[in-house]
Length: 292
Ligand code: ZN
Image 1 (cartoon, rainbow, N blue to C red):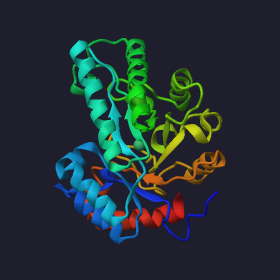
Image 2 (image 1 turned 135 degrees about the horizontal axis):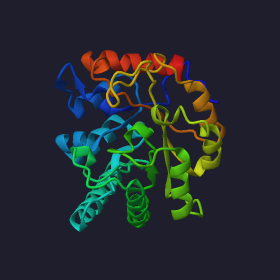
Image 3 (image 1 turned 60 degrees about the vertical axis):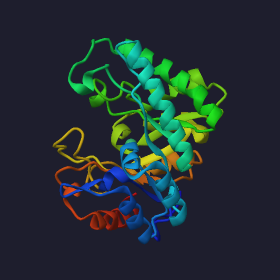
């Protein structure tokens, strides 16, 4: 297992971690500058942040700063209530793929969607099985586009508390079942993003990481699980402040040959988003050395 204690060579910042500090948007170009100034070598930006700054401008800035991507957030949301919804999802995912290519991302991260309409507060039905079937169908279609562009797809299982509205793939086992069905040759075109926040509780986690193997382990996201957690979406903890055994998890992933970035992804409305962005980045560096 790699020693992270001496430097932050393998730290990446998911830019949602510092997207809105003290109520003010922190624009992506400034986040990138602040990361580069601290010797952070990789980021994972969100599509809305990239759109606000301009895709080509962001690509140029990344190159000028020598910043790599550890992923691109995000594609997915495959579930739909009607034919128009299905087409809109396909079109949007193709655009996400193209953006990921322009930015030189190693993979497009997929948050697959829950019951159609639920995120907007109007679920079209209660058939989670049907939603899951639509997700598999959507990933199968996108996989063809992804292969053409040589852009790997990383399915991110989300904690089961999000099954209704955000993602009906909720365990690594479920994600890997989809991978095995759609990419049985383990070509590298389809894999998973392992986010500690979503999967740390799973009794099958170690076995499923081993099942995934190097070809399917495309991204590692870290933060911590606070006890208690006050908000289901926006109360993620800084590494070291909660109950996830992050070194153990990283050890399992690296035992399979994963040698990529550990990407810090913290949504924290009441704590870390209330601080100066530079302070948050400095804390990420320090905790990455000591707690990941
Ligand atoms: Zn994540």
